[in-house]
Image (tube, rainbow, N blue to C red; front, side, top):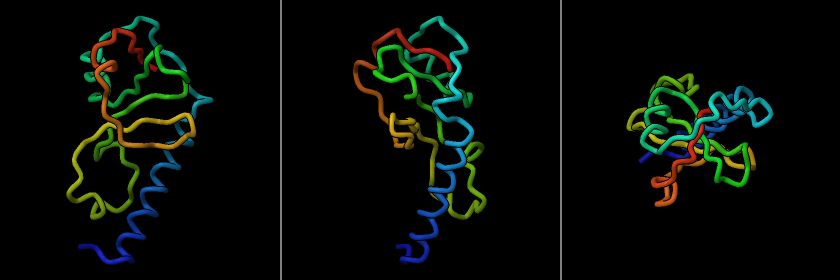
Length: 115
């Protein structure tokens, strides 16, 4: 198990990564690239390619998801990433990144868009 200094360093790096992404991809900079809607299957293909997607059905257009992986992690220290696998994160309405799992509705709707 990691000691407190390693945990603190990891937390600091995670915050640094989140803040750098916020600067690059803030809600103010969102541009809808494609007004055609599609299924989650296509949305998943887009996020696997590093693109951001959202749903028309979500309450706020600043909410979107993206795949976290080693190529877009913004970490400077690769050693902190050992043990991490790819996962989906969501930009929340508060401007925070959180791990995200699709609901049944998210999986079955056809209102996904590329942003």
